[in-house]
Image (tube, rainbow, N blue to C red):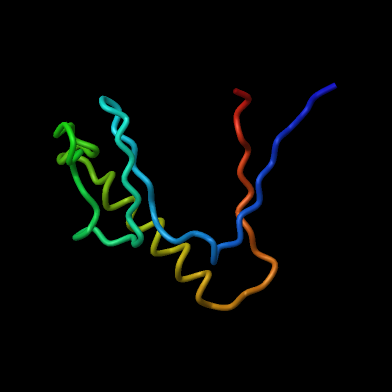
Length: 87
């Protein structure tokens, strides 16, 4: 028998992005997908969250903005389906 955990999230429930430092495990919740407000490095230990040579930060901002755009259209019945890995 296979047991599967599933989580459904309404788009309106996505309010920001949380970033966890890979070194010191500090977690920061940013309430908006704004590249000017998202931190590029950990304020606690200084480790870079995003490679400045790649567009990872912009990709996260774009994803958040697209999700917000869909949520603001007032469409009903649309949820994200997330498979949670077994711990």
